[in-house]
Image (cartoon, rainbow, N blue to C red; front, side, top):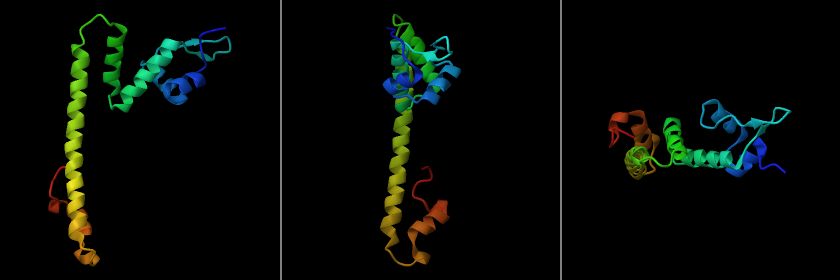
Amino acid sequence: MSDQISIGEAARRSGVKVPTIRYYEQIGLLPAPERTEGNRRNYRKDEVQRLAFIRHSRELGFEIDAIKTLLVLQDNPNQSCATADHIAKDRLRDVEQRIRSLNALKLELETMVEECSHGRVKECRVIETLAHHDQCIHGHH
């Protein structure tokens, strides 16, 4: 019995869809797997784990280039983790900026709803604000 599995089973175990697995192979995130005599892909346990690593990294919002770097680091575990720390810190800064933007958006929407007063459309703050961006509380959202 082989310890290799089909692409469908690799997809099920890793949580990565089959077309995405093929895409990751094309862009070099995942090495081309061994093939059967019938030219079907066969994946090993470590390749399925690599797929799960990529999926989790994408869920956390890491870009493909950052994931490539993180995979190189993972493949060479005796080196400094400074690069990995730098990549994670950059991602954290991006998330913090996004949170600030979303909080500004939330405040703008709360203000629009609060000031609407459920009157007539001609007095509606929601319509007015959407029609004239310069009336927004925050210019960046």
